[in-house]
Amino acid sequence: MPVSENKARALRGELYYAFTPELTKERTNCHRHIVEFNNAGEISRREKTTIWRNIVQDETPLPPQAATEDDDDALFAEEPWVEPPFHADYGYNIKLGQNVFLNFNTTIIDTCLVTIGARTLFGPNVSLYTGSHPLDGDLRNGTKGPESGGEIHIEEDCWIGGNAILLPGVRIGRGSTVGAGSVVTKDVGPYTVVVGNPARKLRDVPRGKYDAEAKEALAALERDEARSKTS
Image (tube, rainbow, N blue to C red):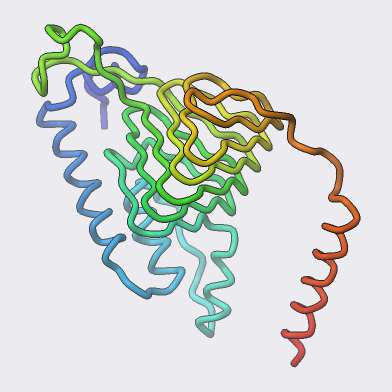
């Protein structure tokens, strides 16, 4: 299906009109799937993945159903885990990697592309805003005026703390942490901890395969897991 020039401008981050029939219809369709997702209650991983893929318009076929519910759930172990309620505008501009976790009340204004790398974790109430408006009030002109945006990219193994806000055009480098309540206005380098409003570098992320205390705690956890599976 061809993309209209207005929609193409939105995806490129240029000025466009958001309240056209085309884009209003797309937001309505996304909202319909989100309402289903947020009100689904206790459902299987297969069912949850199906609804989520409707939101993001991912047409990848699901694996064949396994014999038991536990075995079937295991088929989706690498799928993103999104806690409801979740909020977005279009859905199709959101790309999540494997083992991503989005805690409740994640809001993604996906005017432009949003990518979230594998194993990245969100605290509650995280907001990603790719959309923006002109500063000139005459040009902004309410719902009749143009908007614009900028892509947001979060690389692998990041941790975004609760109530953090990411603004249009930012990139969070691999392995970085954004402190709770921070407002990110510019790029964050890899393996960096940033905090505050606007977010500033606090320190580098410790590197190395865990300290001695963490290694022992992880070993004890794995032993307990192994015992629970054989008992």
